[in-house]
Length: 442
Image 1 (cartoon, rainbow, N blue to C red):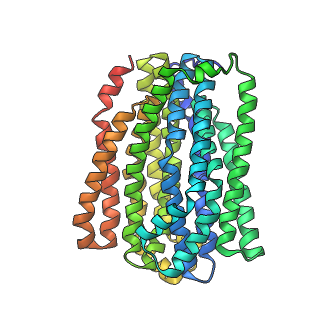
Image 2: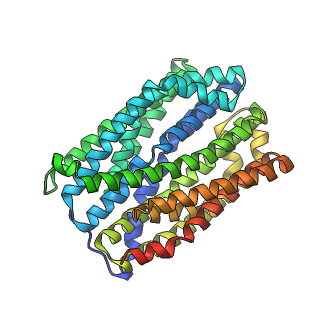
């Protein structure tokens, strides 16, 4: 591998597709961990199993996405080093990120009891739902070091545009998770413990595979890994700054998403479960659309590293146009097959009925949210963490204000409308800062 050679404009569309499609496929597979857990327990006879897993998956989404700077910061820094042809920095970024992932993973495992206590205190579910949720959380959190290492591996692979390797890891992880979940739950009768154990095992398997692939790729690179480069003050300061800002940004995002779940939980177990089923629509769309955002991260980062403003404009234009087209296709897909998807995810009549009522909100969301996802990718590639942090804080405040007005008036419809307001505010806040980003790339 070497620094990027930026193609002529006529080749950009093909290049974006070659880069984006494996990322779209890999990202579309990523949420299947939560989807499989929801679908398997959704076919168990009692409602509290589904509610417990819903709260558990929300907690892990908050925890792991809160530490998503390990992926995003790695991608931006690696993409810029790749664009500049700096192979020693590629190694140094990886080493710093893996050390941080290992340390944070150990902290999460050690703090599993207070983390669970706080989560169930905030969400205040019924006793049966809480018991199921605690079982799920207690088992799955053991895989925290593996999950965070996977974030680093994924970020590095996207940054150097080795996206097929990222897809292969996701295929193996999700295939193993599905097989083990069916075996443990329906074969061995382990219920919620079964889906949690299947997920944890598959996450460790993916981490082992990813690290093996990275070792092979690094063996083909010129240059070397040096302790001095890893501990270089400028590199450490830059890494800390971008990760700090993305961390704050991601915590704000997950506070918004977590509050969405809390609002549903306060309306009863059936509404909590219905929103959890529809949340899978959003997660699947987000991961698919994030494929184009991740392509923008790699291409924008390469352009910034090469200090090529024309390449930056082409990367932004082509990834955004394709993302918009795919988001429209997702809306059509959900509009046609939404009821069927709900039936596949749960057999509980009260949950199906509630989910059908609020389905139109989930159908429309991909086309509303795609612009915030795409701008996230552009700003990550340019390592503009402060802009992302500030924009998300503004959007969270707007979301909170919307819930105060809309939820008392319209109930769960107001919850979903507030979520739409949130993603629009995210996009507008970043769009206002894009001219400064473009100007800095020259």
